[in-house]
Image 1 (cartoon, rainbow, N blue to C red):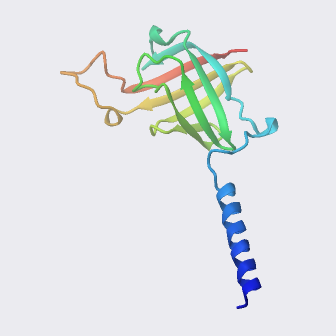
Image 2 (cartoon, helix red, strand yellow; image 1 turned 90 degrees about the horizontal axis):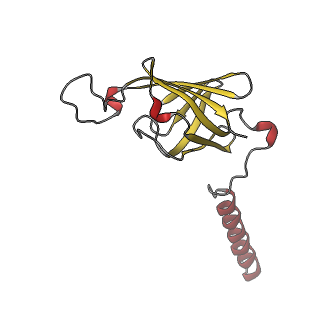
Length: 155
């Protein structure tokens, strides 16, 4: 191989490597177009939280922000969480199908709407997913059970 072909080959290899690095940078995904934004993305305020059908007032009024960072996933942020075993302060999520999202703590949540401004979620916290110290059941610190949250849109 002559010197000019070797130099051209090195430049093309370097350019390809640079383009590959830029294309694979996981932190620079553009946000989805507004038409692709999922309906539960936004800021929400807890209207009601229930564990096994019983109202848990500690959640009432707390705010949740859901961001869409990819077509089928994103991040969430609770500004406060009375129980991070039920819902962590922050994490990520991916769409499982049109009515289910999976949080990064392996909780699968059913999502639905009442009108345009009410978000409803239902999920189950399995006793095997949490480690707590309780001498006997029922335990007031035991988050295991079926949880349902009703949120209002924060404009």
